[in-house]
Structures are given as C-alpha cells and as structure tokens.
Length: 587
Image (cartoon, rainbow, N blue to C red):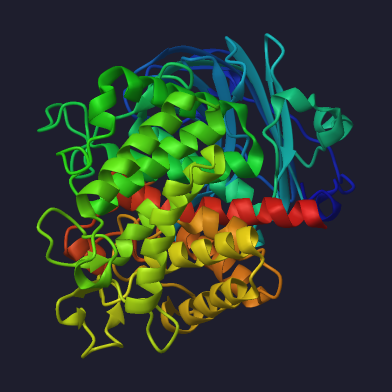
C-alpha cells in the first residue's frame, strides 16, 4: 500500500448527480442496454460493452458507485465494470469486479500505458462470490481508491499508487460496462467535487486480513496481474476443481493429437504459479496447484509419469522439466506420490542418457547426437530428491553431470555453451552469436548452473562455488542482456524456467552485486509494460513487442498464444515478486 502520497485532500464545492431515467437523454443507450428506473440500468451482453453518460465531468475529486447484480455469464467468470473515458469515448480507467463460478471474487483497475490497457491494481482472487456487490471508487489527487463489498460479507479496500495525471485529467465521461455477462446496475451515482465519506472512513488496517491476498508490493501486484492473465487464457474451472487446459505445441484446441495434453508445457505455467505462491502464500494458488496435480494423477498412470524417453518425456529436457514439476508438487503440497514419481523419472533418465561418451554427462535425447546444458533440468530435481531422502545415488549422479558441464561447457567469458558434440562446443567458431531467437548459449541453462553453484555452496561451505555463482551472474549481465534487461535469446519456451530459483537462491547470496537484483526487476517491468498483448498473452521479446512482425520470436513460430511462451515470460515477473517478498522480509 502506498497511502502516504494519496491521502484525500480538501473538497471544494458540492454536487450530486444520480443518473437514471430522469437523465436518460444523457445515456447513450444502445442494443442490450435498458434504463429500468432512476439510477438503475440493465444489460444483456454477449461480448464486452460499455454505456457512457455524457453528463459526468470528472475533475480532481470525484466519487462513482453502483450496486451490481450479476445474473448470467457466458463463461465461468462474470464481470462488471465502472469505467471512465475521454471525450472520444476511449477507455482511460476501468474498475472491474469479477465473480468466478467456483466462489471467488476479484477487483482490479486498468489504465492505458503506452497505448495499451495495463492492470495497476488487483486483489487477485479472494474468497467470496456474492450475489450482489457494491463497488465505490474515488479519486483524490493522483490516486484512486476502491471499495468492494458483497451482500454476504465480502469486503476489499485498496488505494492505488499514483496514476499518471495525463490519464486522470483526460477523463471526460463516466460509464458502465459488462464482459459477456447479464447484469443489473442500481443506485448508480457519480459525484463531482465531493469526497467519499464511505471511503474516507475506511483504512487498509480495518479490512479483515483473511479476505486479502498477502503482499501488495509493486512486483507482487504485477505478478498477480500476470497470473490472472494466465488463468483467463489457460485455466478452466474453479481453483478447487479446475485445471490447466490441455495444450499441444502450446496451443489449445477442441481436438488435440494428444487429448490429455503435453506435460512439460503445463509445467512451465506451474513454475510461474509456484514463484508467486512462494512470494505470497496465496491459498487460492495452492488450491489451483492441488487441483492441477489431482488431474495429472487421474489422467496419467504411474508408469507414464516415469517413462523417460516416451512420447510424454521424449528427451532429457522434457524429463527434467517434468521431474521439477513433480518436486514442486511434493514441496508445496507435501504429496509423497509426487516425490516417488520424480525419483522414478530421474532414475530412468539417468539410466537412458547418462554414460561416459564425450567424457560423461547426459545425451540430450535418444539420437545421441549431442550432450547439452539442458541436463540442468535433471540435476536440480536430483539434488532436491537427495535433500528429501538422503539417497546418495541421486547426489552422486547429479554432481557427475554438474562437473561434466563445468569442464566441457564453461567458456572463457564465464558463460556456458548450450550444446556439445564430437567436435566440441557447438558454435565455438562464433562465440558472440547471442541474439533473440538464436544463440550458442542458453540463458535458462546458465541460470540453472548458477542455482547449482549456490546449492553446492550451501551444502559444502566451499567458497569456490560462491565464486562460481557470482561469476555466472556477472557473465549473464554482461553477455545475455539487451537495453538493460535480460535477453530471451535461445529458447523462449523455457528461458524463464529457473528465474524463481535464481531470485531465491542466487541473487540473495553474500557478495552478490545489487546490479543483478535490479536487472531482474527491470526485466519484469519491461515485460509488464512492453511484452503483453491486449488479450493477456506474453511474448518472447522481453523489451517488446509481444507479437507481430517486430518480434523475431513470433516470426519463427514461438508465439505468445502458446502456453509455454507466455508462462516462461510470466515467470520472470513472478520471480521479481518472489525477490521483492524476500527483500521485504529482510528489511
């Protein structure tokens, strides 16, 4: 909360306008909308729709409010809006209340940033999906306060950080909106130059903490908004009984070549959810993790979940990503079935691809054409299994692969090559070939090695591993950045995979430069500002654009509409939220 700079100022003058049938001429009534009585309107909507009232002239202080009764939705989420636009009726500020069929509610506020609507405040999903809501919003200075109350006890209050005056001062008309929902609005009011007595009496501390998501920092807010985007686009059902929609090659469709969907693709989304869960402890996120794991256990057999080299886990990286997924379910949910499946998958992956050819390490896949930095995805869950079981065989095999990478893939500049074959590092003749949508190194794998360095330092106390972690962070900041942020250079489907662990285990090490923390924060800000499509998908060019001909990633087929592209990128945002949470606890 940033209340200090957003206190309510003095009020000049009084004025009240209750908009209903008496001022029907002021409403631009159109198909689907109906004025019922003074201050009451209804809408039957099949898509997004707004109704504007030209009698409102928002100034420096105003209050808008309405009771909202959601009658019917075209999907699991019903959505009503209080909205403001400029004189051209272009939306400038949208306050939404959403009700999920599972029993949750969400309040949010969006404003335009660089020509696109961006979420600057969200409650995230909180318990309580009431029949009728009262929503009140008020401006004072450069801030907007929102109060959401339900008829069954739901209550949420928040004041935004300062919003650009150019946005607030451009507001010219007030309106109501719906997104594919039949709604009744009543007691619709707009008051200009009148301070809200209701909001003035509220304070953040008076709101029952049980109804609020934990953490309201800048990056946690962005993380909540980004995960909300992922839920709208890739989740069906409620938190307790829903799941990530099945995808194939990252896309959703009614008919898929693999009807149950790919495993590692949904894993990348779980990684992003897990980073935010560890930052906030949000119980709704935990419910979603549990519900997704329940679905996986239902549709895949034990043998399928462990089958390294199968169509479900065809290569070293797929197997590693899925083992990391199982270990998240074990850590966050405490389910030993997940631990057992991770053990089985890691055992079979080592048996299939680990040998002494090329000096050791793991083959990338069954073709045995190269060994790869992607094996960090096997090493990390193997080390986590050792932590849980103290079975030395997992640590021994993991450390043998780690040492192979250190001796065969380490470059003179401190980075690691991505691939290695009989001729040595692939791309050794072009070491500086590091650019978006093509690279001889791999950001995600280098972050993975940094995490393993940190793990080795933690478990041995040997400072050489701390020095290696700092060396890796320094090399990434010098070589895999662009315009002051991380560069997604080799694999936009998974380059953000390790960012949460990177934030937690590497960036918090003693002696780690502040530069590296700021690099993650700046990357998250850039993604949130520049790399989101209007419908909430996230691209591979973290400095933007998210899609289209200006995105090298989209031009070669890695598009934001694929679950792993969006999720990998969103994990950079939720990793920043996790780092923010850790830093706030240490202050």
